[in-house]
Length: 430
Image 1 (cartoon, helix red, strand yellow):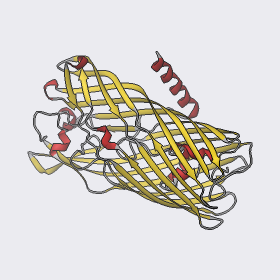
Image 2: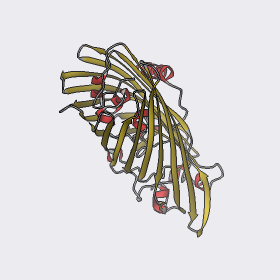
Image 3: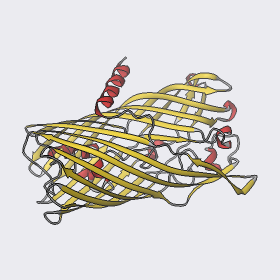
Image 4: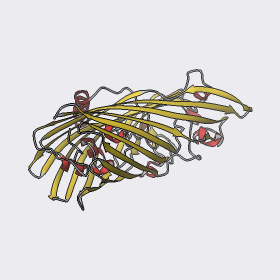
């Protein structure tokens, strides 16, 4: 009953804050979504844990300390992945079998609202921190053999957050994650159970912590932490052997630590840098229990920890227009040993640009664009079969060529309170 009530509140918050999302492609390591800020998007998220916009609270709740009066920010990000997959049969290893583009486009919303009360700032954000949507063609032999079908992950977070100004150079923050998580996994080869499908959902809880330092004029240093969220997922397994059977699994999302720095160089130019670590090795190989544990099998993810590095800059071209750009590089948690056709993720390069236009004293419009590309993504026969089939090596190996276009639009509104920014004097100042 409690979970059902929380789920209703989360869905209501999403409908008020942004458009509904049917499916989302993962555009950070694993099946995480980094696209939570238009301002951050324009700099490849460089220094985002040190501020830059109200949406920085996603990475570091202490950045709320820059808010004066009442502020709101709404972002809408269009993600267009192009993931061309080619398979090679063991019977004809030199003959490519084109699987087409398996990625699905998506619109990803995020919303932030905050109000200052003395030395405290109270905020609420709604986000989708995890998302995945890939789909093999219905005629693909990979789907028929249960090597890869449709894979979907949907999540929704509501995060009430508070920050406190300890001194004029130190702010701390904390938040509660209330997370809805839904998974769908079709056309999976489960050995004796045949080619099956698995689906389920859950509500889980976690927290965020952060600190923001201003050691000198023009310098901001932020460190943020997002905890793991445990999901005890209840669902159904559709199997030609068992029919429609109850199934459950426990999945733990990775902890994330984000470090950011923003440094004002001149009155008009600010540089920023960022570092992020995600504990994807926590995911392991979740056990799926069918019919109350009468039958068990594992989903062999076995991801490694991921790292993300970024560098960017902002230039105040005029009082109304700010330009920004950034570059990032991500070390994927998915290694050659475990990469599958379902999620052929690899290390990726980010190239980004963006701008903000102050339309009125209260309203600022933001734009951000990123181009992502991966390199030489190979899928081995053993990894492709996922360790769930009757033999250690499957009948297909493959390769993927992936590029992503990301376009983000944001609107920031400030009502009441004096102008207050960070290192560049215009961090949250619409």
